[in-house]
Amino acid sequence: MLVIGADSRLGRSVVEALRAQSRVRSVAGADGADASGSPAIARLIAEADPDTVIHLGLEPRPSLAGGRAAMKERNVIGTMQVLAACSKAPGVKRLVVKSSGAVYGCAPRDPALFAEDTPPHQPPTSGYGKDVAEAEGYVRGFARRRPDVAVSVLRFAPFTGPGVASPLLDYLTMPVVPTVLGYDPRLQFVHIDDAVRALVLAAIGAHPGTYNVAGDGAMLLSQIARRLGRPTFPVVSFGSGLFGALIRRAGIADFTPDQVALVRYGRVLDTTRLKERLGWVPTHTTADALRAHAEAIGLKPVVPGWTKGY
Amino acid sequence: MLEDWEDRAARGLAFLRRRLNGEYEVDEFGFDPDLNDSVLMNVLRPLYEKYFRVQVSGIENVPAVGGALIVANHSGTVPVDALMTQVALLDHHPARRHLRMLAADLVFTLPFIGELSRKMGHTLACNPDAERLLRGGEVVAVFPEGFKGVGKPFSQRYRLQRFGRGGFVSAALRTGVPIIPVSIVGAEEIYPKIADLKPLARLLGLPYFPLTPTFPLLGPLGLLPLPTKWHIAFGEPIPTSGYDASAADDPMLVFDLTDQVRETIQDTLYRLLLQRRSVFF
Image 1 (cartoon, rainbow over the protein chains, first blue to last red):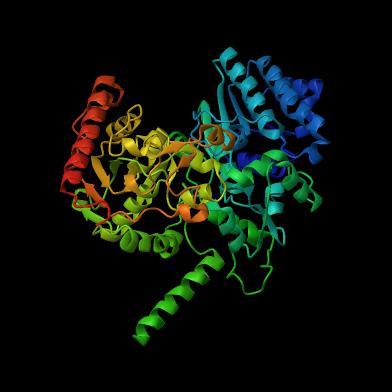
Image 2 (spheres, chains in turn red, cyan; image 1 turned 90 degrees about the horizontal axis):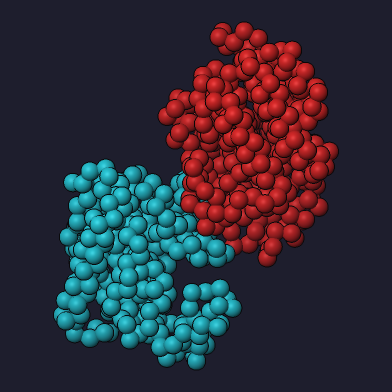
């Protein structure tokens, strides 16, 4: 098995979990950045000759990828390189791709829950969501060309848990959380352990298809802020520009426009298919996942005694 | 008397503490029963009891457990009828059932209103949401006339408009829940819409901009609805569980059932109007 993007928090845990599986003979890892360099990844796949490739290389944070242009390069071109290398490797029987719920975009006219075949009302037109949508398009193309490979695409809700960092979590743990006046979005999280378990299930079985991965239930932004002991500060926002700029000014560099849309309209995923077909049982609900994260980073309420905890 | 007040104060404080700590549950649709039952319904209740003096009949037709689809006529320029039906079911049904409304997409694009609407348990009027709620055993309400109904001119009152494309019937057929036709009398006269300022509506992105005898002539005072006397009649359930799985995709059956529901509501409306003594009493 080959894990691409093994240098990330998720990648390390996936490699570890796969090594603990008795059915897995060997696990090799590659850095996410390698994927965009064609010869490196092609050579790696040719040399390792894996039967399973797990592609975790999609990177949502422009600052970690070296700017938006480099991020797009890494996400889209990187995925194309991986797919090209896989199509040259006859030994590959399974491909698992980490995707994101960001492909659904978010708009007020969408159904309350996104199922895997829900057509998004406003598909993402920029940023990470667009990268992921394009990458998924190439993955579908690969699945058509190589029907002998079981291709699973896992669309994740935002991660939480020990060691996880993301602009969304940074935003939610600000001392005062700015919100968009007049909106209270529903948000959903998945605990990193549950995410790893879903990836392992997809990697060791053959489950072609697209699957949503998220903790059960949803929480309102206002409720999250109260549980974390954070006062909210509603900001009048006509477009996404001003609000996003405010939060980026506050030090969260990667709070991109798709994050702004998320904290305005929210997004909830339907995980029925993953549970039915892969037998995935999450150990954390959305609320548990958030609590686990707050405990892991030792978050203190801003006003002492305001909340019991999380 | 004093104990009663102490009780209330204690309940109020417990509510405030829950709200401050976020110790309440919200479902996947954003429904916040704690806020809905403790605050939002209390705001609507005086309107229901004192202002419109709503009379309810046939509420036993709504099952105490399990899913049901309530289909009602829609009117009144501002969809107050939906909210009053919600109060009726919570206050007068023996099982105190929550009504989950299917609302137009416009509602969810508006700030504040979209947020409140979700917290009251409403969601977007689309088949995936309707079927998910019905499968979950909820009572769902749909107003198939939509904006054609709410925004119809005063001269058209109590005349049902086209019943959408019958999406609500296929949702009921797919989930096998009964359809309960509901006729609402009184709501059609609260804001007599005598004209529609179409250019202004287009400018504001609204489906219509109503002119009533008092609005916008009297300014904010014109926003006060007329204190009509209401009657909400829950009709006999129409079962849908006897059909096979492909029934929802049979357009003839869907049309027939849609017509049956529509005619039941229209007939009941005419019957109730005949019995009514006056619009206001």
